[in-house]
Length: 469
Image 1 (cartoon, rainbow, N blue to C red):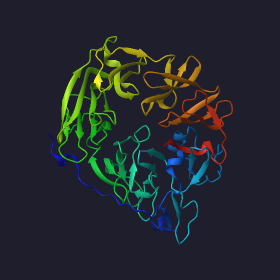
Image 2 (image 1 turned 120 degrees about the vertical axis):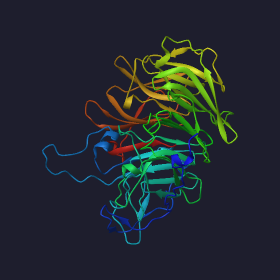
Image 3 (image 1 turned 45 degrees about the vertical axis):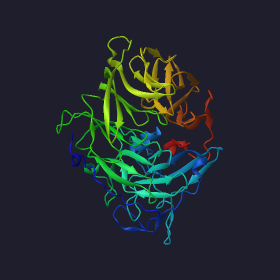
Image 4 (image 1 turned 45 degrees about the horizontal axis):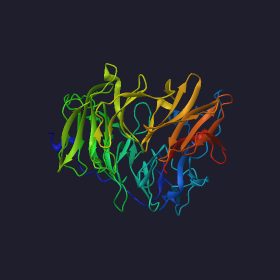
């Protein structure tokens, strides 16, 4: 068992304010007073999604929005971009502009008081807005909105995307008030030094908002994946490290204490027990490395203040070798493994127990999974993804026992999409014939997509689009 101090499991309290004083520019000079609003000013229970637009056109933002950065082809001057904005799409269909900050007593221009929202994350208790580089009288790389009353808090943590520019991985406990993510600590210049990047545990339950503690120095221990159970214990899978080439995976207790180290190489996939069920504080961990499942799933269950590990060898009837199966995914009727090569699935856990003789099934009418990053989006026991059969494209909702296909309108290229717990889909894309940027949706349970009127929300400026209800 590894000494606790090796993991930097120390309390690093991050400054949190319900309102902040003077904003500063990149040089640290005072700018007319901008303060964080006390509340977000809208009932979050009535918001279906948040949409952020950006006034800048960096390559990463252009990539997020599925568009090229604006600029002049002849090298001449371009018009200054509009300030970043945040919109709430209500469940009743309204589009409302929302401000996270307001002018202080000294006054501020709209450009000075608009934080650039790069990503939005939803938990059962909070909505988190990633605002990299934003500064008030303290650094404010993360703004948190409490669902129950809309209260706003800021933190100097800046969520850290991976090398491909994808959104940071965020995991939470069942209540949504303990969040795990990889982040860095903004310095006085609003920058995030690479050596400050850590795996953080952010506790949101206190009345003063977010407080963070370092879990792991991710520059030393290379993270492959992590997952939280209902209680907030954290499973962490590692890439091999020169510091300890034998270390593969551990469970870090939410209340502190010694990490529990699993035996062998257990990084083929992990899923927590089903929330609200007897196994909600357990982890199911597939043995082997990514893409090389070894046929064994280990159950890591709580035992007093620690954990106990029990291996289970699957009697899986699949074409040999079974190594193509990897990743564990929870769907409506159990836990599945997925083979990306031939698009087959196998249900390995149902009703809290292992399936005696699991056999693969094939996704119907799916030649290939396409769309943004070939992503499968798992939400509330279902998968949503974009599939192709020949020249025909469609959204697919799949919950294990049923599959629902939603044909894409001809000539619409989807660049990104977000899914609600009800199965409603919101998406961004463009018309192939004209290049026009569009925003569309598919209602929960519906099999027809609609293109929404742009109105005050310009789809070409969208950089973040997330369902929260």
